[in-house]
Amino acid sequence: MNEEDVPMHERAIKWFEPSPDWVPIEERGSYATYAKDLDYMWHWILVKDGEIIQEGCSISFHTTQRSVAHIMEFFASRNLSAIT
Image 1 (cartoon, rainbow, N blue to C red):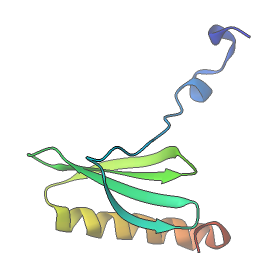
Image 2 (cartoon, rainbow, N blue to C red; image 1 turned 45 degrees about the horizontal axis):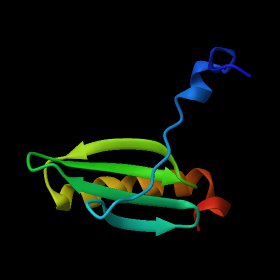
Image 3 (cartoon, rainbow, N blue to C red; image 1 turned 90 degrees about the vertical axis):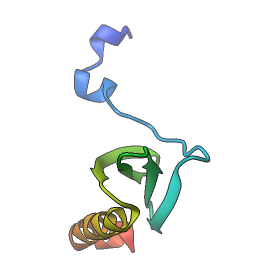
């Protein structure tokens, strides 16, 4: 199968392998969150089984932790068996 034959949404999947500059924030079931200090902001990501499902940024590490906790609760409320 050629790359052109694969739908764009399937080609766009991003996989994540944490490097030492990514700080693990929280893990629940198959979900994990990480953050990286970019000096001017913190970039955070939510990963499920290695696939990036959501990412965002925050001004400080503290606000990153709050954002990530909120996102994890959102997913927990919709998919309890997968996250707990």
